[in-house]
Image 1 (cartoon, rainbow, N blue to C red):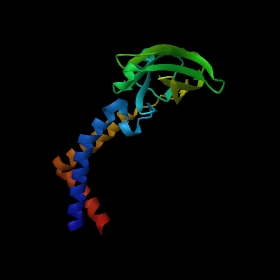
Image 2 (image 1 turned 60 degrees about the vertical axis):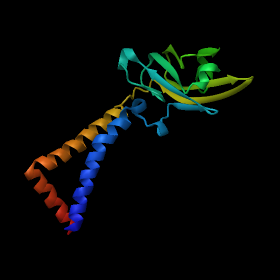
Image 3 (image 1 turned 135 degrees about the vertical axis):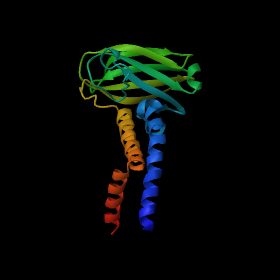
Image 4 (image 1 turned 60 degrees about the horizontal axis):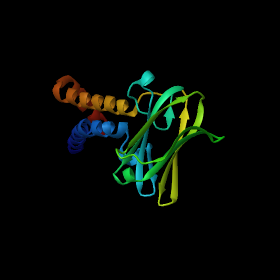
Length: 194
């Protein structure tokens, strides 16, 4: 009986945790937590966040490593922190494996911490996003692999997390408010205990 109460308490805690924490994690940085955000590029001690949008096809859906459709895409580079705002940065996107340049923004400073441009991707395949910090005569280049035209946009991670959170929270609320459902769950859990 003691284990049964512990299981119920654990389920209650899990339900409360899921309903309060997961939505916040899903909405931060476009559905990715800061630690696992693959759209972040570290250039020396500095961080740049790369995001691509296809507003004419997918509204405000953010892409990072894979843009599902060919055509116009808005690429955005956001500086994390203020130090890069005074430094010279250049941006380039190349078609791989040939290394053919499809976009280039020459070295410049961006006092507002953001640079964006529209690119027309006409060929499906693999690309590479280069971000180069030019500081005191030295260049530090980092990059992100990018695929374009895979046609597999799928369901955004943030949507999946929100739906799962709502299901867990809904199940927990049903458990607390519906005696028949509660009895069925309790009966199922007590069978597993035996």
